[in-house]
Image (cartoon, rainbow, N blue to C red; front, top):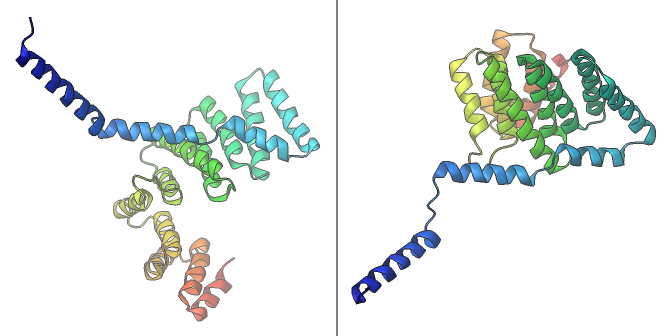
Length: 259
């Protein structure tokens, strides 16, 4: 039979349970991050939504051409035939500036071929949507899908620095809330490990221009030109940096060299 002390003990335990349960976050940090990531993904759009919006915006003849490609996929008897139609679809949607849909069909190719190049193409196709899509939900969709594809390419060839650069750029162009500097830090790490990689230096210079760090951008671009005097994209970007920094004379000089 329970006495008064037992009741007091039970009451104390119950009170402690409610304090711990409702007043303290007992979930491990890893679980909270994963749940936040899943919630973020659910809030973004999906390929069905993108296709529905695209169908509403295309002319009937344009949609008819797309539907013909879809029909050819349905009757395709070989992977090579499907791949060709997926390429056609990806190219057609890309030309219409539907980068999320173009990336989706590039990813379908990668799923069949399962090679480094195909996953890289899927990742960089999606990445164009981060920069150029007009709707924020499509940008978010492209960011998530681009990273997944590029991480797959990296897993197939961890030594290819270009995949790592492209992945870092997705984080720099579409920062994650919990670590907004992740992309730039990834690029700086790649620069430290590959000090003469001009692609890494170019991307760092590009973000330097965007953030007003003109001196650092100029320093990196001049280093690129010391290594590769005819690097046209470095020449063109240098013209932009000098113009933004107010050095109109050098801006004009490099602008004339930009092809």
